[in-house]
Every structure is written in C-alpha cells, then in structure tokens.
Image: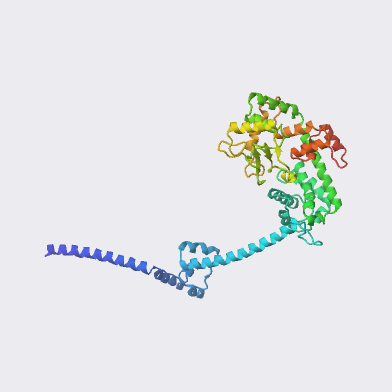
Length: 467
C-alpha cells in the first residue's frame, strides 16, 4: 500500500507546481491589465498614511483632491517637470506641453517688443538722432546700450569700447558710478585725466601701457563723434583736453616704437634687391611671388592669405578677389576698410601680373592665389581663423634672401622701410602712397627719424620727460 502511494504523491506535487505557475501567470496578466489602478490604490493608501508624495506622482495618478486635503503641493514647477516627461504619462505630458506653449508665447511677445525697440533705436542712431532726451542725465549704462547701435562700430569695436568703459568705472576709481551722469566725469576732465594717468593695472600693479592710455583717451573722442547724446553734453574744453592727451600719447608711442626699431630697419633698395635675387634663383616661386607683391605694389599688410581667383568682375565686396586676365586685385577685407570705402581695384603691372599668374599656374591653385594642400585659403582680415599661418609663410619669404641676418624682416618692417624711403617727397606723393598702403598719412609720419620724433616731443607744451 505504501509503495502504491509514492506515485500519487509525485503526481500531486507536479500538479501543485503547475497550479502555482498558472496562478503566477494569471497574476501577471491581471497586473498588466490593471497596473495603473493597482499603483493608484497603493499611492492613495500612502497618502492616507501621511506619506508626502511628489507633485508629479500626485498628478500622474489623479490624486490632487486627496493631496490638497493633506496640504500637499500639486502644481508643476521646474523641479518636477523633467521627471514627469521621462515617466511618459500622457496626461502629464499634455499639461507640460500646454505650460511650455504658454511660456513660449510670452517669450515670443517679449522678443517682438525687444526687436521693435531695438529697430527704433537703431533707426534713430543711424539718423544721428538722440535716444536719451536732452536735459536728462546720460549714464554709463545708457552708453553701453547705445554703443552697439552705432553703425560705424563693428562687433569687436563695440566689445572693446564697452570693456574699456567697464574698466574705467570698476577698476580705476573713475570719478563716477555706472548709474551716475557720465558727463560729471568727462566734463571734470582734469580729475578724469589724473585718474587715467595714475591708474594701476590691478592684475600686475603696474601703470598702464602707452597703447592702453591711448585707448582710454580715445573714448571721449570717438563717443563725441558718433553718439549725439554724448556730443551735446561734452564741453569743447573737455574734448580739447582729451584730444591733446590722446595726441601726446600717440607721439609717445611712435617714439617708443622708434627706439625699439633702432638698428632693426632695412633700406628699401635692399628689399628691391631681395626680389631681384629671388627672381634669378627661383623665378615664379612662392618666395619670388610674395616679394613681388610687397615691392611692385605699395606694401600692404598681411592681406594676401585669402584672395579668391575670379574670371569676371565680382558682384560683391565680401572677400578679396584677383582676376588673372585683367590683373585687377579687389582688396575689400583689410584692417582699415572703413576708412577706404569705394576705392578702385589695384591693377597689377605687366611684370607683377606675369609673376602672379605664373605662380598660380605652377602651384596649380584653383580657388585662391595661395592655397593650403587641401585647397583651402590661409586667412583674411576679419576671418574667424587667424592669419598667423600665412604670416609665417610671408615672413619666411621676406627673410630668405635677407642681406642682414641680424634683422628679422616682417611686413611691418617692409612698410616702414617704404614710408621712410619717401619722407623727402612732397605731401601729395606721400598722401598717394599712404592711400595705396591703406593707412593714414599721420601713421606714415610715425616713421620719421628719431631726431624728428624727439623734436616733436620737446615742442609739446604738455609733454613729459622721456622715459
């Protein structure tokens, strides 16, 4: 009897396991079907027990009424929006979407109002009309708002001027605050000049450089030129005082540069000889072409690293262009472009045209006169990329046949050499050369002889002793 019972026990055990699995499956199926209700019931029980649930949990399971009775927060905010999105609840997503759309509409309206205001301000500024009524104070904060609207200022200039104003107000103990009438500072020119000249660079504790002082003193001059609100408030006496200081420090900088360049110059005749040597040893090479561009033309800055090759007259002035057929060089992007608007293209003479065209053919340049191996240009003035890579190439070419290895020749040295070479010429000729070199005659005057520069300093009534 006991032996017959063993199989029956095994069968009972197997049936029990099957039944358990069936129950588990049934339970899982029920949970899948009623998952939300089950979780909702659990959350409701937690609320009754006084457990503090998160707002997104309360909203997800529709327990707002129960939660409010318990004094719990049921509103969406920045802290609980994101978790709800990730939980993927349709009801919560809909609420969040409505909230975002409402906020976006508010932002759109604010942006439209801001654009409209900026357009009105820009139109007034472009017509030379004032944004700040006469008879009211003009603050540094007002200037920061007006400066970006001046058409003559590019983004870099705007950034530099605002940074300089910030430095005056916040770092050099300028005699006024950001929300104070700015004219109380600038019209008190004696105090302002004293603060500027005695200021120390807080990062190093040293006096500001001559170039930085020039920038400080140029601020009232340029603001008076381009911002009517500033011009009508600045007294002529104050403007004259700042202008005189500006001119003084420009002369001082020129003298400092002359000291640095003493014994580092090169005669223009030697630059011409370098080109001739390159033409004999390696005609139409990179070195020969670069030396030719800086001698057959009045020497420009580093403006040849981004010159597109074209076949017809360019329709725009976005870039620099060269037409091999006509020999016309359209220089549009360069440091002093705003000063030389509407200038005609350079026309390469027969020899320069031949050299440049032969180089293009030899180098197999397709898009630009000077290309990298990947066919891209080096850089042009105002480009995001710097011109340093091409600058290195130019300097290498300028020094390859340098007769005086103690002197490192750069484009600046070449330009100074040419300007020094024509100082004995009449003003009209020097003015013509200055235009072709794309700088001011006053800049060209900075290459006077050392004796002439010292004479200019000695004759300055407000000058200081030479350092």
